[in-house]
Length: 298
Image (cartoon, rainbow, N blue to C red):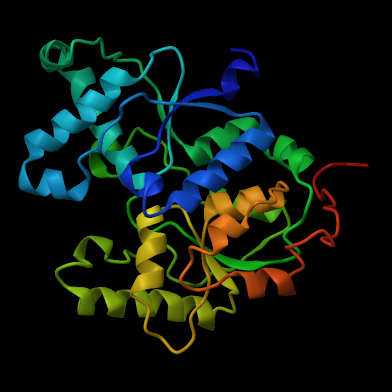
């Protein structure tokens, strides 16, 4: 496979990235456009089932995921941004791989072929394939030592049924460190934020969120950078601590480092305004100092 072919992906946005976290999708499109990653959104995609459908009716949740898989062309990877969507699509695909009879039934249901060889990857995997050196070459503004906690949450961990699938732990901090950020360790960056309990047990969720934010403050972080749109929303909405921190989508910080300029549309959607922090770090505006590539020899 040529390098150019490695840059072509089908794209499944998922409900949260397309609606409540549209700033994640906007910044993702900006970053991919700058890097030359070509994303083709699945036509007429639907919800993957998320926790709600699978909790009430597992068969319904599976059918929703299988329909999305039937829309994916087999000749290029299917890129997913949301960890929960990634989990459900991969899990459904594994079931279809292992049970040809089930796969044929789903193909009859939707009237389309479902490739047992379809590759389903997270955005972080696409960046790993792109390469840190190529990322650095595309960067125009460094992150100037921005102190961030890389918050993965719980879903991006490898579930038991998917132990052979790779989940790229540590890649978020590796990428942003290569672009001039400073990862902060010692905070609760893999603890569940309780997002699935937000509607029914908000007091429990508030306690979990405050502990996560408090651990980031105690560790000396300026902000948290998330790999999950639902985590980002939950950490902002449910925090009642006296000191709050900006909660970024990973794609926002990546696109900013790559030189995106229409970030006002993203940051005005945040409940904790991140712009004062970014201004202090000299990461906004035309006066941003150029990025020096630490891993590229001169």
